[in-house]
Image 1: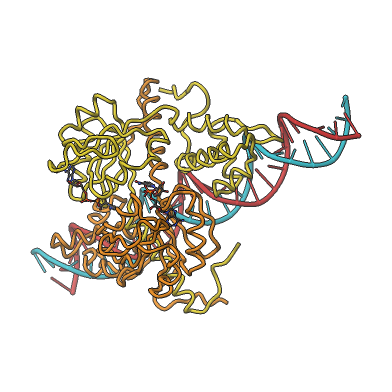
Image 2 (image 1 turned 180 degrees about the horizontal axis):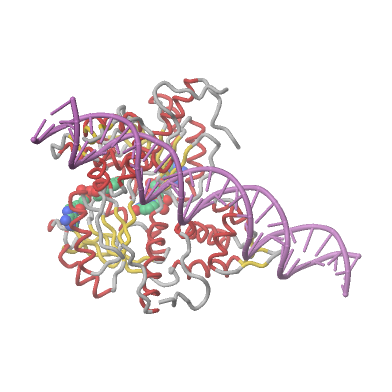
Length: 229
Length: 229
DNA sequence: AGGAGTTTGTGAACGGGAGAACAAACTGAG
DNA sequence: CTCAGTTTGTTCTCCCGTTCACAAACTCCT
Ligand SMILES: NC(=O)c1ccc[n+]([C@@H]2O[C@H](COP(=O)([O-])OP(=O)(O)OC[C@H]3O[C@@H](n4cnc5c(N)ncnc54)[C@H](O)[C@@H]3O)[C@@H](O)[C@H]2O)c1
Ligand SMILES: NC(=O)c1ccc[n+]([C@@H]2O[C@H](COP(=O)([O-])OP(=O)(O)OC[C@H]3O[C@@H](n4cnc5c(N)ncnc54)[C@H](O)[C@@H]3O)[C@@H](O)[C@H]2O)c1
């Protein structure tokens, strides 16, 4: 009951930190490619586009991997973050809905290079089956469960029209998937223990539109605010 | 100086609220299509996947558009939110980088139906010019400035490889664009007053992977936590 | 008209994250 | 060995966002 004791260090990294770790990881990979062996929190923070105090606090949740007076060993920190996120191993992924977006996702090489392997492309449209996209057969949606079990798939991507998304999510959960990345513009209902992250292009654009409008309105009003630092 | 007085109601809606308004808008559109005339905060909150108190507080920043004891008029609220976001008018958008992802974006109909109009598709690859995607010519990247000025474009989408993204962003800002949606996995540096939102598929997957791993580790440890409500 | 029932709008408590600031810990020169 | 310089890890404070809880406001029934 009280056994929250984990092997190494404290668990439960804050969500905000988890969301930034992949950014740090990317920055470290870039630094490593440039031949940098060591970096300070200041340098890494700049590369990642965040405040250095925030970076240090984030890293402190993982453990104490830096050296005072020196900084961080790029390769070592890179490995530690990758291990914490879990991308030292490969994650099998299934993509459902191979339309415009599904094709783009299947062809995306950044998938593979970051520890994700597309093991199946599924679509309900029979006209699409056995088409080969990026070296993977498009298979009937019904094969979901078999594939999930066979490859121990934990992560599913939904790129179907919005009306089908909830159905697909239900089937995914039933098949044993516990994490879903949803591109369809719908709110998905899932049981406890299942994670959903959504990517909604229209929402992003609408947020941008709001700010454009606000900036324009502020400009018309003639006041000179907004600029702080 | 103290003139933060605006015409109608108080300005500066919290960012978290701004990010949810499009979700409410989508839920209201769905309700309207189903013939619902009126809805309570509870119903709308459920449809939007949020807490009803949060919904009410969010809406209260826009004004007082509900009726106590009754709820909200779906059409009226829909219009008010659309007006607040700024999607009662059409926003011209340019997309730069017409590869896998750019094609998908250009073909995406949800763009148009939500108040965004793709006025130009730009790519640096000459082999691509004059190809027509979704009814729009692909043009050389150099035409950016002319198009931005001609159509008063405020919003730009970057779908180029990561190495080109900063360059493209610089050119966009120079041309007069003030809001950027970035799909390339890079941190963009932009001047104050320019908004950048990023969509990074790999980061989303890595966040999901972290949680899968955490769940698995918790399972192995044998503790029965996680479930609260 | 009055009262019961319903639902909004908001004040207040609470929790988590952001940033400033500093002590602890390391390096390297003399 | 000592001391100056550097950089981490962490504490402390502040602010934003979430949630609870309730008075105010409205409807409808009798
Ligand atoms: N294209 C984009 O750039 C873009 C951007 C943002 C969001 N989206 C969203 O992503 C989703 C897909 O967009 P798209 O442009 O690729 O659409 P699309 O119509 O081109 O593709 C949808 C695919 O899903 C398949 N499908 C339909 N129902 C299915 C089901 N029940 N099971 C399995 N497959 C099914 C269809 O056969 C089709 O191949 C949509 O919800 C869209 O709103 C797309
Ligand atoms: N394909 C996906 O599903 C996906 C998913 C997430 C992120 N991304 C990211 O989106 C970006 C585009 O991905 P993609 O798969 O479409 O790549 P892609 O290589 O298919 O397309 C890139 C396009 O950009 C053009 N381009 C290159 N440099 C340019 C420049 N300076 N100015 C204008 N155009 C230029 C190229 O000619 C090409 O047409 C990449 O950064 C990728 O990491 C893609």
